[in-house]
Image (cartoon, rainbow, N blue to C red):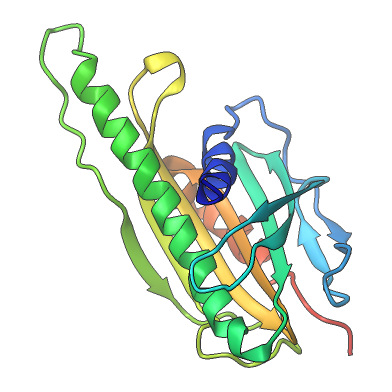
Length: 216
């Protein structure tokens, strides 16, 4: 199914979170291609990829372009796509947020299944509540973006399967959705819950999400 491609992209982001040996943050300006001139600030050098996907509500498959990198135990990502008509911009903004939430729910379900089928050393079955907790954050405020009611911020909390069948790992995803003309963006940070709750982790997320702007 085409939708599987979207799930695979997000699960790959969550599953690839690095451990403590990840490099420290090294901020630099990045100018993504085909992004209406958007300028971004990344804490590491992002790699580029693209996927052809189907999103709910959009009449045709779209090409999603992705920039992402790993640093300080987290993954930093920007994805964007273009739609053919202005009426589809709010649809695409909602679809990106829904896709992220759905991907995390899939990971949480897998983490719960893994926990039930892998008893602990003491023989007890650890309980892992499946699902995703979603908290709406203040709307995106990217300078010179196109105003849209669906330009929102979200914090998603879930669990992903542990490496090699190990214990599930709490995961926090902070995402911001915004648009410019017919181009729709999702900026996101995928962090282990411990990093997301630390002061330095919160500050880094704020720096990343406030580092986007369009030229005047």
